[in-house]
Length: 212
Image 1: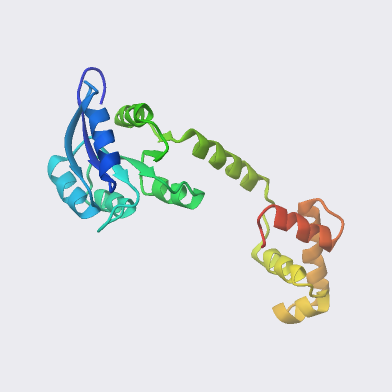
Image 2: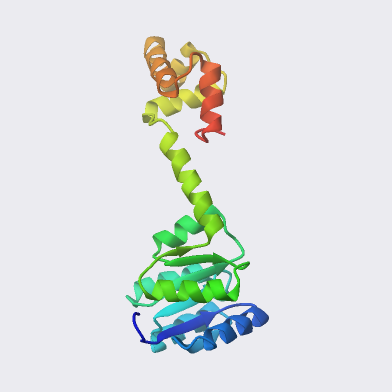
């Protein structure tokens, strides 16, 4: 919401003390109106359907329905409510998952009340907000992904078997292809990695997270 309009906010938080602290911070903002709170996801989604807040602050680890399930329900119901998720878990997999679901803000539980309120205001304006440390890590991971060479499915299979220590004939037998075809794939893998031998290719693949 923009200008002098009031942003309606709903809070769902499992921890009563933290819930109270966030609620007080929201009430202290003249541009916010707190329209409801809940301690579990089941209550939260039922009330969000009724009050239709502009922004919902959701704890990721809510009982009954967790924050991710509440976000899915908001999406299924076609509600315009935008979500800021608060989480003690800042793993990249979780962040990617909730962003795909449409979460507009992601902050860790270490965020201060001022940062949480600023995130609510920004999300209400249509912006996306990520915890600075999480954002920095995601950017680094995306850059690393961009550095990874694009292997064909067959090259990836050959690479995994090289890592297991199989020779070209054994790889060929495993994949039902000729040794010369295996060698062609190996040559392509070496060129894509910019290395000169199989051991270096395996080491580089492990460094880039392509194989364990």
